Amino acid sequence: MKENRNLLTAGVVILVCLVVAALAASMPGRERTYEVETINSPEYKTDAARAIDAYERLMDRYMDLSEKIFSKMGGDSQAVSTKLDSLDSRLADISARLTRIEKALGIDPNGNPSPSKSPNASGVK
Image 1 (cartoon, rainbow, N blue to C red):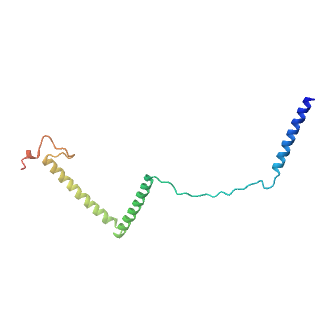
Image 2 (tube, rainbow, N blue to C red):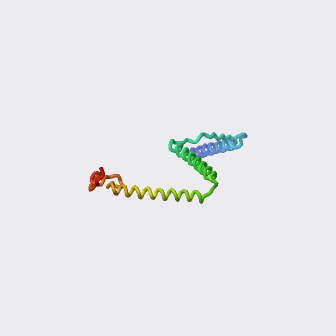
């Protein structure tokens, strides 16, 4: 008898759970829809990122300026090449003269004075 009572109790509990589940599934308006609104916040930038951005803007402006100057010269690359070659030869001449002067005065090209010669030892007063 006690087993029958336990089986009956378990059956009633299962039946009640099924009824509650069926009622919960059949309730109208149970589907809820949510509206999601996205909020755009400004991008966080570090000081380094701001510096890089500023440098890129500066380089863009420099390139634009260089293009304008080059176009004002007529875009004559031959004239520019000739001028650059002239400047290069002048710099080579100056470098050769400086090397001769350093050698005559006993100056080390790296900025260290030569220990064997002093400026007064060469006879220059």
